[in-house]
Image (tube, rainbow, N blue to C red; front, side):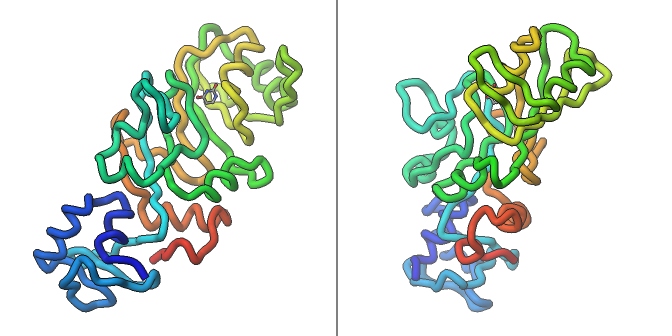
Length: 244
Ligand code: URA
């Protein structure tokens, strides 16, 4: 059992204060009945709706952000981090990124307080592909794509798993797909081919795609559909998420 306002605020869609206001205005129902008090304790299986629209909720919080360049994806630092881009009530609940991006990398960052999710999503055994758009100094070609497919061996001896490199009409741009996430991996792989990365953006993790409507620095809660995508990957157990 959990307080109604906490359940709703945990979705990341409203602050605790906004939730209280929604409830006060009579806009929230629990299992079809008007919810009158923020402090009412509800079962985790409760069906909540705001303005008649069903709200997916779980014990954990799941957000996607379009990470801007110039900001760290670690959780605590003297420098600005992605957590600083969130409103106050979401800065205090222990969110962390699932798979870091370099300071100068943009794009899809999943933020959660669900430790198991991070572990499972990043495990090479789960085959959750990470897809990146890349721009390099130089010209990408079939030989690069073949080298990626064969599994590159980097200068320091690191053996990379086979990876995808899709060429585009512009010879200095491509799409890289990785099944693992070693430190600076895309940059190191392309540096090994003599084509240093000048711009990098993560587009997807598994079937979870960056919402292109999010400008850099913007974030939103995952939708019910996106949570179902993660649960269908076996990323977290069904009990934790109540899909609709
Ligand atoms: N590979 C990199 O080199 N950097 C990132 O931020 C992500 C993948």
